[in-house]
Image (cartoon, rainbow, N blue to C red):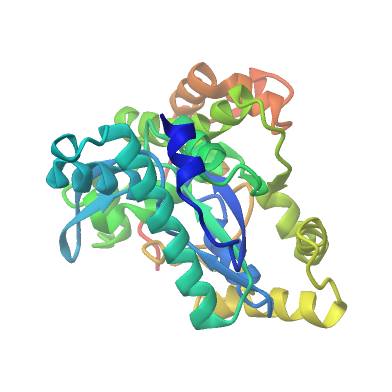
Length: 327
């Protein structure tokens, strides 16, 4: 029925091109998005199209819903009572997602005058497979890039990012937000939050492994080494301007000092979205118990991506930490 409907419904050719960057949260996607958006032909967005996800999250500003477009389309389909109109629910949902996504991208392209839209996606937990399937279903010709970062840095950055959202009452919050000088923290992570962040990291990686479609990979650490090389390769894949002037403008517009409001890379601000901007910071926060948990849940992926050769890195970690309040 979907094929018959597709033949019946004609659409104008898209006036834009679209590509996707998929990664775990805290993998450098905002940094990459900022750099890409300084290209005169590129608009980098975050539309949360796929994943069939809805949840209400608490943050410092109050409760806020997190919802993907396909979930909203399902809600609209139910409200419309398509069955009474002789429409199957899955057909109506499919068309709603396709039309809403197309119109959103078309409008953004028209308003900005940019013809290449790069949509960044950091999948919610349990949705990575659905994200890749949604891209394949609705934008089968769109290039999809996998962005990865050392998962231990992802977990460290992620828990710092959550200090203001759900850390109140924890020892981490007391040390890094309240800055209690009398405190010493022997373990930064707890098993529940570390497990959650390991899932955030490993689920997109495993989804790409299972996904038949071959996708190029960008590494956070490569961007730290030479972002200009990474960006030039990215723009070349999309047949965009790769001139030195354009690439340098992208690099300059996304420098840590610019994004952090003046801090230099390596100078940490515990509760800032742009916290420290370095690789390997996880070594300051992992205990042996944390390493054992990470190796058990995602050690295979850590080695497969070349971040470690085996699990012996765990043996080098301390039994406990001695973290004090930042000055």
